Length: 136
Image (cartoon, rainbow, N blue to C red; front, top):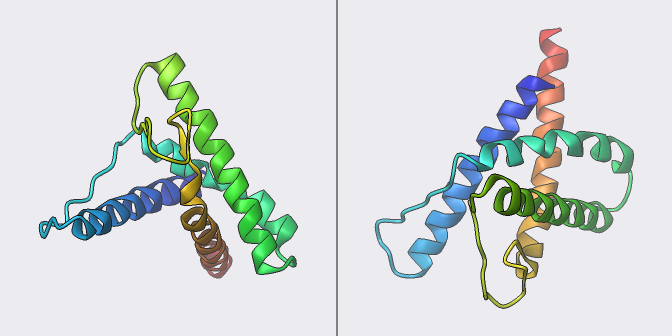
């Protein structure tokens, strides 16, 4: 489980850098600068908790599974953002007054991205389990 926490953390950091780089290009930055905060590593690592959910909902339709992941990711993002801001005193992200932002902690317009990310997580989870079974 610890190894998968690290893998999910690193995969999330990479995903965020690519996402931010893509949006910088869309804004006209041909340098395609993507960035993240190392504070995000443990948050992405928490995807290890989604493994239990994945195993429980594996046989449900794709739309339902993606919706479940979206809600769980929003919940984790909101709670961790609140903890970072109000307890630790840092803000790795702040959506401020952006439309569809909830207390600056989550963006509801990111629902499609989290939907897809959740389904990609399933593929990564299955690959990691498959690799583990081949090694054992």
